[in-house]
Image (cartoon, rainbow, N blue to C red; front, side):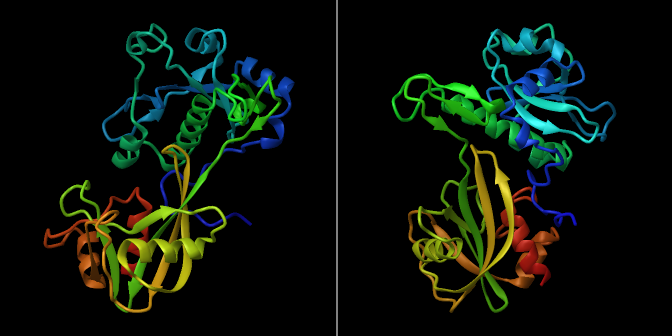
Length: 314
């Protein structure tokens, strides 16, 4: 039985990640050499994207043939295995940040452009499944770029297992990608939900509260702690909603609904500058585009939007 469809952007990755293949250096090398394999270039963590063929058709991921790998990636390319698609082709991501003139490179000029992943997600110009693949690629390239040196002894580290491990040739330490868990929760009390805002946010924007899960802390404990620290709320119960991979650089947003014991609150003035309880009808109106203009919510690509939508539809 398949898993339920996740409502969040950057989730629902369709690839077979074939993680059991990564340690087989011969197999990985064979896939890189296979003319049927494809790779997508990333320049400073922005993916290569092909323009719309016709207006409204949407943009496509700029998958390229492996024959261009050395030309774009150099002698020691940073290339990460992503997985195998439904057609049996192996897909990779390649860092091309070393190109001197990436916009005018002969292999790329006129084909497409490197675009910000967040902007693509907000605009809805790439299909959700392709956005999930690009999120995986961005996180993995970012991790390898950040961990070029051993955290134990400081020596240069080597990439291994198709990009999912780095090894230190000096002290033999092994390093693996990390995912940082973040709780994001919508506090509710009766027929209202609590939303806050930070000073740096656009005027009028309110959202669910969020914070990193600390070592030795459960999800429920993190939800209760963050709500109390930021807004003085006391939590009665916590329920799971959904998760969202968040490649900035590599977090997992854990969406929760939290029932508050009462409606008493006091914002901390540090994380939050404002906060208030909103009725179900108020958020319904904003979601329907019929709000009074006094506040607005994060766009649909954000998990906070999905949390508020769930509350509104209850």
